[in-house]
Amino acid sequence: MFRTVQEGSIVLVARGYSGGGLLRAAKKQQYVFAGASQLISRLEKSLPDQNTSKSLVRIAPASPPTKNATRLLTSGHTAVRKAAGQHLLVKDVLEIRLGGVTGDASFFLLSDAERSSLALPTKACRPILSKASHLMGAEIADEDWQRLRSDRDRVWLFDPSASQLAHPAIKKYMKLASSKGGCNRKAYKVRVRDPWYRTPIQREIHGFMSGMSGWGPWVVFKRMPRLAASNTLYLVRFKSAMTPDEQAAWAMWLLTTRASRRLRSIGRRYADGLLKFEPGDIASLRIDEPKQTEGAQESYSHAVQLLLTGQRAAARRVADKWFD
Image (tube, rainbow, N blue to C red):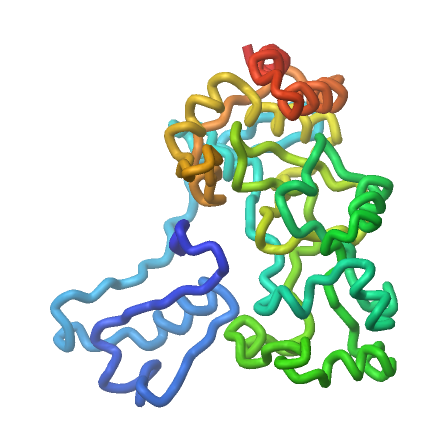
């Protein structure tokens, strides 16, 4: 509902509801909804008296789309929906969200050495990326993650299933006091979820992205099953069914000259020269449609390698060809 809120939490101030209904005894009760649609449905059933408040915001149901309200941009198997008369935006093609919010990173994120010392089975952990330096190419496969694992980085997310809770090592780890390396069960993100030991992770994703960079964000495609990321990184999902070439062609736009100009206008510059890009800001950028898609995967990999070796102008020239 608010694009600057990145962790899925919303504080809603409603006027005129204090007399009863939904927010009766509001000071004593907390209402938590699974999503915006559930919240809106509940509010519509509890609209206050018009005389109760002079500044009511009523929630009206959306009007059904007209016959010609949208058009489809098609490229091979791609179907990207665009509102009539409007520019295509990144959010029409890509969904960009924060990675898993653990609530207590020191407990849930582990290096392989830490996992081994605790005797935690790998089946109770999920492979994960936990920092921007883990994104070092156009894609990340099993062999790339294995190198991170051997470098003693935090590459495991403690994520046991209910059937694994009886395992002695898992049971011992979960019972540790927070002062001795156990989980801070009072942390908000831990306290409000059920079960507390499962970090919510978006399961169907196509890649990863970092919001911190000296040149801008790019998509790192996921080539390893079960691989996820913590909330230091972003998760990327293409909204329409696409081939790898089609995905790469759309992702190529972030490397173009036009994209770099638009990205500079939204980046928040830090003292060390890095730019921070928020998911909502990236999603709201205008994006161009690629002119072709065949062979884009190989070209995208080449462009990313040029970018990562400091050859930004060359990377942009490679990317620009797909949109000119």
